[in-house]
Image (cartoon, rainbow, N blue to C red):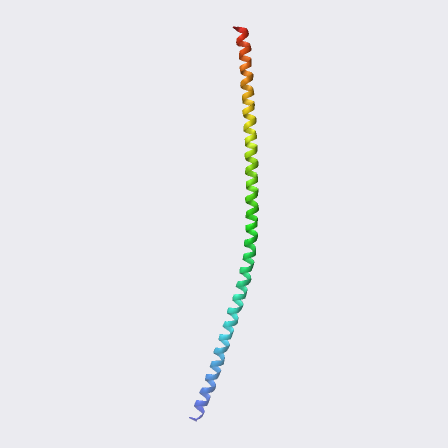
Length: 104
């Protein structure tokens, strides 16, 4: 009986070692799988980042163009308003001169 005990203990230890090895292999597989999925996610994020950078550059260009157009149209409108005001002032001066000259 006492001779069977060490043999059974050795068998039990082997089974426990086998289970531990299986757990370690399962953990390694899980870590490997997680790393691969993270790599795929990072790759997708990089592609999205590049696309967003392109979109931002395009939007900056559009904003600059719109600012240029608004600036040009505002400048043109201001110039037109100034010209109209100058013309009105000149017309008023001319009318004053006519009325002032004929009345005086």
